[in-house]
Image: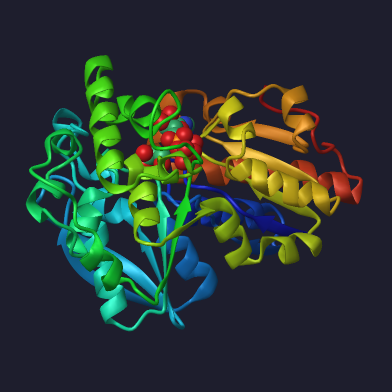
Length: 381
Ligand SMILES: Nc1ncnc2c1ncn2[C@@H]1O[C@H](COP(=O)(O)OP(=O)(O)OP(=O)(O)O)[C@@H](O)[C@H]1O
Ligand SMILES: O=C(O)[C@H](O)CO
């Protein structure tokens, strides 16, 4: 059997690469002759550089940049040909901020700008920045400051300060720093910068903001938008990704693209799917959100387009059989159910995923050869 294994990360327990490897190992333990094609994926958030490196090869460059709270953090970016791939979460990700220090009023995207500057200095003609999983809400102001925007200090100290900037914002030097470079924001969401569906309201709470702070952060971003762009960039889809980093990139001539589309294109999913008998995708929590354009949904659509069955192996499954079927998903399998508890699924995630994949292999390879245990005779609901 030819299997394409294309999962997202299981946030908090397995990277996409680890998840894909565990599924492949589990499958091959039952069906050693299977041809497994591993295509770990990312939507632009954490894992972006690792999955593109797996798919494209290229060279990883190490850097030390300003982290979300100001202290330096290590970050790796990928260079493949004349294109550099940067993962904003490596410089300002939520995972870099301990739970008791989360404060989207203070965290900065400055390190992202440092990575862009470094890639451009290395000679990149195209810079693709994955956006998502951030701890910030600074409209990309810190990133712009690292590229030369003024007043640098006030722009670098987080989203709260944007409501009281000491003077006009100067963007010329930042624009000049990326002049002639194709700059792409590969975003995990298409939210605008401001308002009910904006960065602060939708993603502020997961970064530690309460209702009052959400209001203040939204007002501060609105003031920043007034000071930087009289046009409609604030309303552009994706401007609100990564705490408004999408907006900041638009200000210096960047283009917004779907991170999922960028990654699926880069890894050549459609081509591999066309030669497959089964596609396996997955993520930590497969819920109704997942069916609104998240990675497993994109993979399922690619499989459905080619008439290839697709199954989901997820940490937890919160989608019913009918909803899944409507999205082109033949079966869903839950690690929590197969491991017996959330605790077991989370603490022994790789091992439990291998076991679950072996079980799925028994069902699906058995079904193909007409053996007992037809595919899909049991699944998590
Ligand atoms: N091994 C696991 N077993 C059971 N549940 C898991 C496991 N790993 C992660 N999870 C659950 O999945 C959640 C994370 O979901 P997921 O990996 O889909 O990412 P997310 O935070 O929803 O981000 P994204 O928007 O990128 O999908 C965790 O909070 C946890 O509840
Ligand atoms: O980083 C964030 O704010 C979310 O992942 C949306 O982009």
